[in-house]
Length: 588
Image 1: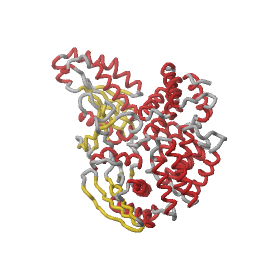
Image 2 (image 1 turned 45 degrees about the vertical axis):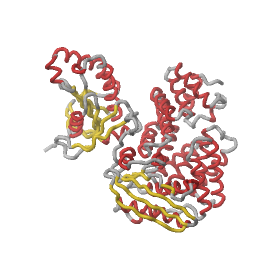
Image 3 (image 1 turned 180 degrees about the horizontal axis):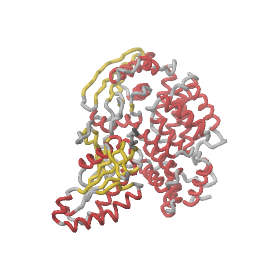
Image 4 (image 1 turned 90 degrees about the vertical axis):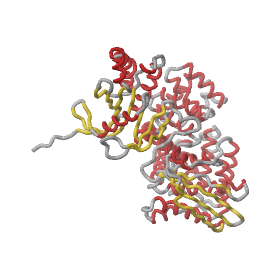
């Protein structure tokens, strides 16, 4: 007896219907049908075709559409809903046709041209929850869209959908693309324990000791991020709350985490006291509070105690062996460690060249005091990369030899340190154009620490230079999720623009580059990508305006010296980049 094989596949499903359709038909049947047909002909069906959707079936006032990509489905829905706002602008409220849309990504059963299954049922239930003119999605769709579309989402909480066994976390899409004034979009919780470590308060009575408190927190974040079964928010996002009175519940919503760790550091003479309290951000409940105190030379042990206690509180099933492996002493020299923390504080300002020069001096001093101090090499590499980005290190000239020596040494000293490996890898790729070696170190960094936003972000750049735009976009999107409030969001968007440029999607590349410039008008790579992409898209007038902005940022830039600013793209991509610069009007 043969059993008929059921055909299944994963797909994005869009379900839509007209809000208040029965009322509209009762008031004006012919007019309503004519309006609906006109909207479909002029807007809905063309948008579905544009975003590679397939209309599975229509049901009078509704339709079911499948897409290969969540991004395509969501972009299509948003453009339709925004288009309907324009088309309804002159129509009285009681006569408007407004769609409700639900989107899901799930497993479906195929029978002929029709589709069935829970994936379809959830999409239909989400459409029922949507407001007129709105779009509802589950957490998976929300997560898949992060970093790929410039949209914000509002958490509607867990919903028990009819005939669906498990509750579904539902999000409403904000069609304006922005959260309300003073409010950031809510992010979905990851599928494993998640935590953000807020800046600790400096209780030393001396503002000059802020660098020490910040350094302690950074080490705790690094230690926690090594636990692969934790989701840890990057330091660049958690530190956006520094110096602010915060609502822990709001922090949890904005960063998409279940737990928040806050505390204080007191350094006096040769003693250090670290206090911490772990809070469940969903309820505001305190899970524990503790104090860790010891001699200054024991600061690393104290940091380890905080990290281990946090892990023990929220993931009791973690093996003790993994906890022990996470404990690592950076240096036996407290003087070297102090220079490193001072350099780190300077580099984190990221705004003027002078601060990176100071950071490099401190890092060099730390290396001099302890040549085996891997984190100091990483800090030095950050400074060299900054100098390269400002055109201060040219290929074959002063600086590259030193950068290579530091990068190679860092890869040896920090072979088990993901942060060191990722910056060594990026330095090899960006400064020395050794893409394969750089990508290899970045892959090792991601494997060692999947929570390290820097590794995913820097890998995104390198993968675009290697001609792998799809992988690049995935890595950048993951970095944005790990660090959703990162001050470097402009650079992340520039990296996204680079991936689209490599893929030949010049309109998308210019759009992302322009978003990056709104975040950081002085972002040279973003400005150049905007000009290049607009030129290659045939928008020469806009490209020329973009080039004028490029030259305001970098007045000395010419085709003759552009190679020192252009990232290490493959030869074909590099040729297109240079063609775009010329078309945009860069002087020879």
